[in-house]
Length: 394
Ligand code: GLV
Ligand code: MN
Ligand code: MN
Ligand code: MN
Image (tube, rainbow, N blue to C red; front, side, top):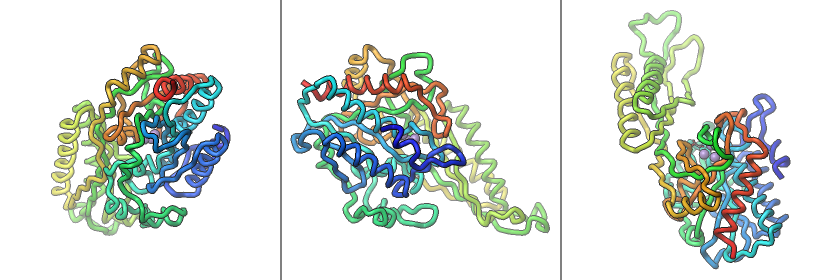
């Protein structure tokens, strides 16, 4: 099953994945999910927000145990971030059936749509819509880099966009959600193959627009320039320094330049800041400081700076009793926090939620070099099966 998914959306040039919401590779991943569900005799459902569900038992009974993750990727992402949780979910169900487990409540496997936000700029769109954290109106405003609106992209992919929005009835069916994910750091590297999540750092995305003036690179005197690239560069350096001092993280990983000509001073530089910290006051203060630096430097450069918060996820503390129960089922598995966002972090506001992490020897993620050893992945499947058996079986 893993082998079938591996070539889907893989770039021959980079070796990384380009599975973006509603693109062709995403459609292939979705077809794969549906097939896995049908092959196992599970009831397949595509919900109003583009999330896919595979049900064992009657969803209307309530108290369902749900597991899964996402199949989309960041630009040139690795093979594990997302798919490991979905593949492990199907494999854990197979394992439970082999064990002859008797289910006491419904079980579902889910593939949340557009977790990475690579196309429309907001992460976890499928789970945010479901939880009502992202409104239908706000989702309708989202556009990709080519100006395609989210509802139009959905419609082109065959999904009715008019129905998107909060789905409380669906959430009310869920008794517990457990997402398995490759670890995206090295907490587990020297420890055990599988750990349990304690918390997710608060994090968000901010867009800085640096408005300058386009002009000739060869004839415009230095003192006459209003060059937004300078303000941008200074902001990037300041963000790094201030984040280090605060024990936090600040990353400019995406930038767009207009008109983007070698021999023209830019008129606009648009830089996206991803920032994360262990607590919200630290994060808020850090972003405010970065904004202040940008504005001060903008004054000197004759550049107007505009800041837009594109998304924000508050700190997530996973359900304590569920976390402890998982750790106990797994024989005292290590418990660790993470700086990465997940659909589990969105669902945690609505249903008891937990996460399992599978060891990542290098800690590298959001890169084609992301890796987990096969033995650790199999340990992850066994751990997930143990957890599901404890939660869903007699
Ligand atoms: C998602 O993987 C994120 O944390 O950005
Ligand atoms: Mn990711
Ligand atoms: Mn992920
Ligand atoms: Mn993620």
